[in-house]
Image (cartoon, rainbow, N blue to C red):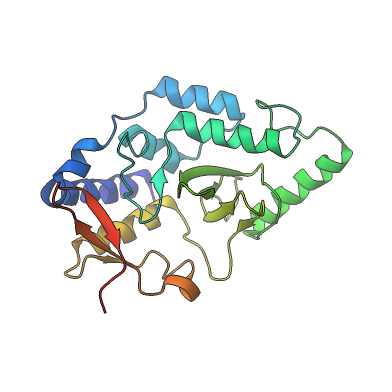
Length: 227
């Protein structure tokens, strides 16, 4: 999937919001400027994957109203991606807030293990320096993106601040931001307005998906589908 595919999916989502949830559409933030993205990359020491940069150039996060374009998650703006990433590194005792380089031999070994696991698309139970937070559930959980070049680059998973673990299990995760946004767009445009967000991610917990509703003020609200 390409940046064009992501742009098309995002345009479909915005068109649906404009037609059905105008307040949510109006609350979406402006695009990130190239300088904002550059600052975030400098802070993390990471060149953002093309899909993430494309998304930020469309809209810089969820906006002041915290519009959940993805059910249960608010997209993070560029500055928050960098701040969250470096905060977690500092919390885990890394060398500094601005450098992903290991501080000693032990962390060097862990870092090498992180890279190997990321390349293989596997899980690990300490904070990865190879995953960028791209969205938050507001309760200590994050949607993270594997930025390490390789066959699993761009793959999405979950990170919890409670146990410090990054999970891509028990089922295959979304392969990319584009695949996720396409699923959201397909769901919004369906007759039932149901996004089976966890159909490819966590079927054991929410196989029924999420249903798009609109409140009286014109804001998108995700709800469990009615029986």
